[in-house]
Length: 208
Image (cartoon, rainbow, N blue to C red; front, side, top):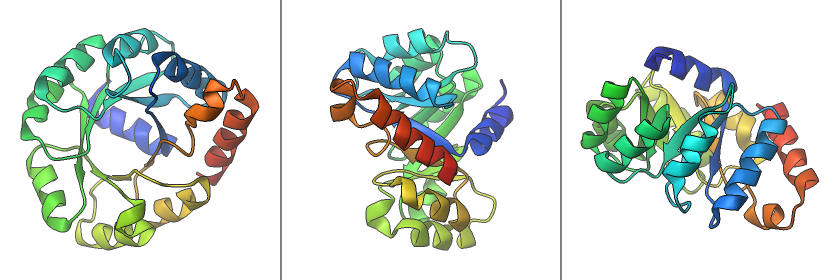
């Protein structure tokens, strides 16, 4: 899949679940339940124990696109890409992440908050600019302001976004939205509360 095709899939999906759990088994469970709910793109953060191995496992699932999040360096990016990640996400601007992504034909999302940081992310080779933390930086209004200055840039707000806010972020100009804790509640996962996770997942998909 080309970078252009990857971006089209992300835009079409509109929501990217961000899996950030303390235990790998909880991430595996979340991935399975979110798949049941119809999600076909997942971001696996490197804060999960042995995340590259999990990416390798999930990348073999038919129809599932897996990316790596909270990637701190080109070395880790390379390991994730080798494991099957199709996009790399960092919450900051790191120009060294561009080369391994370009070599693998993978999409790169770099984090930014201000106009200066957005410009730096684009100059560093970002295909998507991740606005993080979105909720504490002005929410959908902040995305609308950035989109007015950077028309055509694909923004992905992430951080503290609730299901009820998804539509407002998309309407403000977000290409798609990253959602973690509100969608992947580790407490509910650990308790085996599949019904609760699926209910939130359904609400999120309806909102998008």
